[in-house]
Image (cartoon, rainbow, N blue to C red; front, side, top):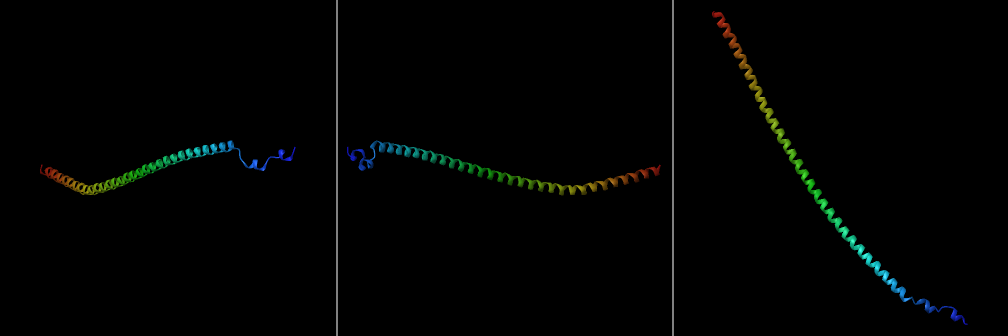
Length: 124
Protein backbone atom coordinates (compact mmCIF):
# COMPACT_ATOMS: atom_id res chain seq x y z
CA UNK A 1 0.00 0.00 0.00
CA UNK A 2 1.09 3.45 -0.67
CA UNK A 3 0.87 6.45 1.56
CA UNK A 4 -1.52 8.17 -0.86
CA UNK A 5 -4.40 5.81 -0.08
CA UNK A 6 -4.20 6.28 3.68
CA UNK A 7 -4.11 10.08 3.61
CA UNK A 8 -7.15 11.92 2.38
CA UNK A 9 -6.73 14.12 -0.57
CA UNK A 10 -6.50 17.87 0.20
CA UNK A 11 -9.03 18.58 -2.55
CA UNK A 12 -11.60 16.35 -0.80
CA UNK A 13 -11.41 18.48 2.37
CA UNK A 14 -12.23 21.70 0.52
CA UNK A 15 -15.52 20.49 -0.98
CA UNK A 16 -18.36 20.68 1.59
CA UNK A 17 -20.98 18.00 1.82
CA UNK A 18 -24.06 19.15 -0.22
CA UNK A 19 -26.51 17.86 2.40
CA UNK A 20 -24.86 20.01 5.08
CA UNK A 21 -25.17 23.07 2.85
CA UNK A 22 -28.84 22.26 2.21
CA UNK A 23 -29.51 21.82 5.94
CA UNK A 24 -27.62 25.02 6.74
CA UNK A 25 -29.62 26.91 4.12
CA UNK A 26 -32.90 25.50 5.49
CA UNK A 27 -31.96 26.53 9.04
CA UNK A 28 -30.96 30.01 7.83
CA UNK A 29 -34.35 30.37 6.07
CA UNK A 30 -36.14 29.16 9.20
CA UNK A 31 -34.22 31.64 11.37
CA UNK A 32 -34.91 34.46 8.87
CA UNK A 33 -38.61 33.53 8.80
CA UNK A 34 -38.78 33.44 12.61
CA UNK A 35 -36.94 36.77 12.80
CA UNK A 36 -39.37 38.32 10.28
CA UNK A 37 -42.34 37.03 12.27
CA UNK A 38 -40.84 38.30 15.53
CA UNK A 39 -40.16 41.71 13.99
CA UNK A 40 -43.73 41.88 12.61
CA UNK A 41 -45.12 40.99 16.03
CA UNK A 42 -42.85 43.56 17.65
CA UNK A 43 -43.91 46.22 15.14
CA UNK A 44 -47.58 45.42 15.80
CA UNK A 45 -47.04 45.53 19.55
CA UNK A 46 -45.17 48.84 19.30
CA UNK A 47 -47.94 50.33 17.14
CA UNK A 48 -50.50 49.14 19.68
CA UNK A 49 -48.49 50.63 22.53
CA UNK A 50 -48.09 53.90 20.63
CA UNK A 51 -51.83 54.06 19.93
CA UNK A 52 -52.62 53.29 23.57
CA UNK A 53 -50.14 55.90 24.76
CA UNK A 54 -51.60 58.48 22.36
CA UNK A 55 -55.15 57.74 23.53
CA UNK A 56 -54.03 57.90 27.16
CA UNK A 57 -52.43 61.28 26.58
CA UNK A 58 -55.61 62.56 24.90
CA UNK A 59 -57.72 61.33 27.82
CA UNK A 60 -55.26 62.90 30.28
CA UNK A 61 -55.37 66.17 28.34
CA UNK A 62 -59.18 66.13 28.33
CA UNK A 63 -59.26 65.41 32.06
CA UNK A 64 -56.82 68.22 32.84
CA UNK A 65 -58.77 70.63 30.64
CA UNK A 66 -62.06 69.62 32.25
CA UNK A 67 -60.58 69.92 35.73
CA UNK A 68 -59.21 73.38 34.94
CA UNK A 69 -62.62 74.45 33.61
CA UNK A 70 -64.35 73.14 36.73
CA UNK A 71 -61.85 74.85 39.04
CA UNK A 72 -62.29 78.08 37.07
CA UNK A 73 -66.06 77.75 37.40
CA UNK A 74 -65.74 77.10 41.14
CA UNK A 75 -63.53 80.17 41.54
CA UNK A 76 -66.05 82.31 39.63
CA UNK A 77 -68.88 80.96 41.78
CA UNK A 78 -66.89 81.71 44.92
CA UNK A 79 -66.28 85.29 43.80
CA UNK A 80 -69.97 85.66 42.93
CA UNK A 81 -70.94 84.33 46.37
CA UNK A 82 -68.47 86.72 48.05
CA UNK A 83 -69.94 89.62 46.07
CA UNK A 84 -73.47 88.63 47.15
CA UNK A 85 -72.29 88.30 50.76
CA UNK A 86 -70.76 91.78 50.55
CA UNK A 87 -74.02 93.15 49.10
CA UNK A 88 -75.94 91.48 51.91
CA UNK A 89 -73.53 92.93 54.46
CA UNK A 90 -73.99 96.40 52.95
CA UNK A 91 -77.76 95.98 53.03
CA UNK A 92 -77.53 94.93 56.67
CA UNK A 93 -75.74 98.22 57.40
CA UNK A 94 -78.88 99.92 56.12
CA UNK A 95 -80.85 97.70 58.48
CA UNK A 96 -78.75 99.02 61.36
CA UNK A 97 -79.94 102.52 60.51
CA UNK A 98 -83.55 101.33 60.32
CA UNK A 99 -83.12 99.51 63.65
CA UNK A 100 -81.83 102.73 65.24
CA UNK A 101 -84.78 104.65 63.82
CA UNK A 102 -87.19 102.04 65.21
CA UNK A 103 -85.53 102.38 68.64
CA UNK A 104 -85.86 106.15 68.45
CA UNK A 105 -89.55 105.91 67.48
CA UNK A 106 -90.13 103.42 70.31
CA UNK A 107 -88.44 105.75 72.77
CA UNK A 108 -90.56 108.66 71.51
CA UNK A 109 -93.71 106.56 71.90
CA UNK A 110 -92.69 105.59 75.42
CA UNK A 111 -92.00 109.22 76.28
CA UNK A 112 -95.32 110.24 74.70
CA UNK A 113 -97.16 107.52 76.62
CA UNK A 114 -95.47 108.52 79.86
CA UNK A 115 -96.41 112.18 79.37
CA UNK A 116 -99.89 111.25 78.32
CA UNK A 117 -100.45 109.03 81.35
CA UNK A 118 -98.95 111.61 83.67
CA UNK A 119 -101.21 114.33 82.20
CA UNK A 120 -104.27 112.11 82.57
CA UNK A 121 -103.27 111.32 86.16
CA UNK A 122 -102.90 115.02 86.96
CA UNK A 123 -106.30 115.92 85.49
CA UNK A 124 -108.20 113.56 87.78
